[in-house]
Amino acid sequence: MTLTEQLASRAEEHDRDGSFPYEGVGAVHEAGLLNATIGARFGGEGAGLARTVGILHEVGKGDPSVALVTAMTLFTHAAQDRSGGWPAEVYDEVLTESAQRPVLLNALRVEPELGTPARGGLPRTIARRVGDSWLLSGHKIFSTGAEALRWMVVWARTDEDPVRVGGFIVRGDSPGITVLPTWDHLGLRASRSDDVLFTDVQVPYDATIGLVEHGSAPDRRDEITAWNSLGLTALYLGVAEAAQEWLVTFLNHRVPTNLGEPLATLPRFQAAVGEIEVALLGANALVRGLAERVDDGDAAAVVQSAGAKTIGTRAAITAVEQAVSLTGNHGLSRSQPLQRHYRDVLCSRVHTPQDDVIISAAGRSALSRKGG
Image (tube, rainbow, N blue to C red; front, side):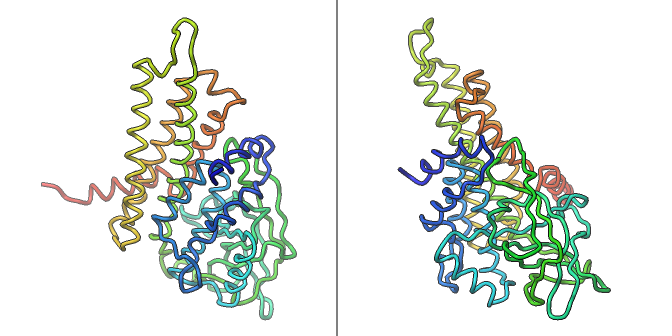
């Protein structure tokens, strides 16, 4: 059984009861994929974006909730390899643990009042300096994998004047952390993207990343955005491929009595499946091609990755919608995985950068090119 098949075999169970897929994360770790982006200078594989895109596509095809928590960990290791930021002593602890068991990492940035920080604003989560430590208090939402995170990078502000903002590195088992089981979502139910409350959580003074005076410097996240855009798009294209495979099997086995042969023999179904095939082929080629260019240091590919997210996720959603429309009640039955794929693929719209931001930026860029 392949890793994708192994993950798929438990995906329905975790979707139904909203339970975290610990065994799926364990399988990804055992396959050597959870740590793939740990840099070569840290003794890891040092996988680039193209390799990561391939991993997330295959894991997403099996269980996108497992893929999403895997993505957050892979992105964190990749950022450390390229830009640094984690204190050496803390990251050494991460590496030691990661060699022995699954260690999940994620950045917690979204808040109830603020929403996504990508749209601006100052976090309400606050770190107060007390001696040689910070005491961190606040409320984060949509915290993917919350109950299973070993390390959290919590976006917060200081109580200083002037205020500084940045990431505070917190162990998931630190006193003062409460995970609230608030996640009751349409899709990616097993990702357990719950709320997390921090109440005077003690953080060592130097356990911070990118702590700068608020407004003093831009948040340079271009390459991080490229990894998020292409990596997560690959994940949802994996979901669409799983839906396509189910559809093909269904059409080849469904033999209405009035027809006497499989639905797959009808031209209209052949044309519809062809539309899905071509759309997914193009989207996958775009995502993988841009990922390779990002790895090669192509600055234009970094910029274009956001647009590829819109193209790729729209292709994935449309493909699954077409599969649902072709199969009707069969596809929407809870006994079949297609309805789950449909619910999961819709989640592609919520990830940063979101379509309205991407499209507006693309429009401004195009209009700034003063044509003849």
